[in-house]
Image 1: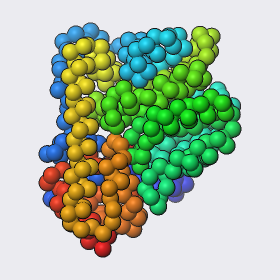
Image 2 (image 1 turned 60 degrees about the horizontal axis):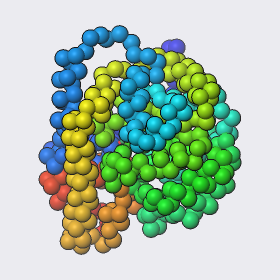
Image 3 (image 1 turned 90 degrees about the vertical axis):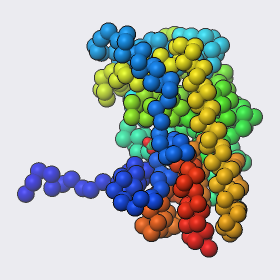
Image 4 (image 1 turned 135 degrees about the vertical axis):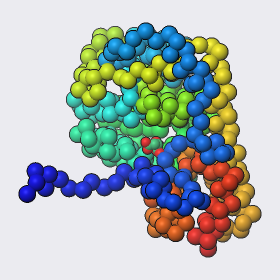
Length: 399
Ligand code: LMR
C-alpha cells in the first residue's frame, strides 16, 4: 500500500505530448507539425540575431541576480505596453494600464485567471469553439468554469461571423470573454478590423470583459495591424485584459517571457487591481524570471535592435505565407481530391485542415507525421524537404 495509490493517471497534454512522441520516433523522415514553434526552411528554430546581440549586451552590463519586483521591471512594463497598445494610446492610458511581467503568455493567462477568480464576480469565462487546448485547463485550474461561444464553421473551415456575433451578444455583463487578438489558435481564422470594431462595441454595450490572448503579434499581417483589436477595445474606455507572449515573435520559447496588461478605469482602481495581481503572482511564482524579460527590454528599448527585430519578424511571417502558398499549390498539383485554398486565407502558424482525429492518429502511427488530434497543423513546420512526402501521404489519406 503506497501513499500514492489514490493518484490517477492524467491525460497527456494534447499538444506537447505529440512532440514528446515525435522525439521518441526513430524514423529519419518524421515530420512534426504539432506544437506552435517556428522553424526555418532547414528545420531549425533559430535564435534571432537581435536576441544574440541583446544577450551579449546583457552579459556585459548585468550587475546583479537579485529579485525583480513582483510585477517585473517598470521599464519592461512601459516597453511592452507600447508594443501592444501603440505609443499614443499607451501614453493616454498612463496610470490606467497595469502590467505584470509573467513567465510566458501562459503565465499571464494564469495570473489573469487567478485574479478574475479571486477578485471579480464573473460567473463564467467564454472560449471560442474551438480554442487553444490549454485555455480550458488554465481557467478551470483557477476555479472558473469555461463555456464556449460559436466561432468556426467546420463545414467551410472558416470563421462563422454571424454565428459568432449572435453568440457573444448573449454573454452576460461581468463575464470574461477570451478572444484571440490575431492568428487564431487553432484555426488561423481571424476577424477583420471592421469586425473587431463591431465586437468592441458589443462588449462595451453588453458589459462583458474581453481578455485578449496575444501570442502572435507580427505573424498575421504586421506588428501594428495585428494589434488592431487591442487598440479598438482599449479605446472603448472599458476594462480589458491582454495576455502577451514573446515566445513566437522574439523566438524566446524556452525563456518563458510574457506580460499581463489590465486596463482599468482610474488610478484608484489601478492601485487596487495591482495589489490583487501582486498576490496572484506572489502565490504562484513570487516574481518573474529575469533573463527573458531583459532580452525583451533590450530588443524593444534600443532603436537599432528594435528595427532589426521588425525585419526578423517580417521574414518569419513571410516564410509562413510562402509555405502556405507552396503547400496549397503542391496539394493541387498532386491532385489531392479536396480544395485546400482556404489555407491561404488563414493567418499565423496554424491551420485547421479538416482532418479527423482518426486520420491524425493514422498520420502519426503509419507515417511519422505528427499533427494535433483536432486536425490542427503548424504550417511553420513545413519545409521544402518535408513538403513532397507530406503531400504524398495526405493524398493517400484523403483518397
Ligand atoms: C501551441 O499552441 O502549440 C503553442 O501555443 C505552444 C503551447 O504551449 O501549446
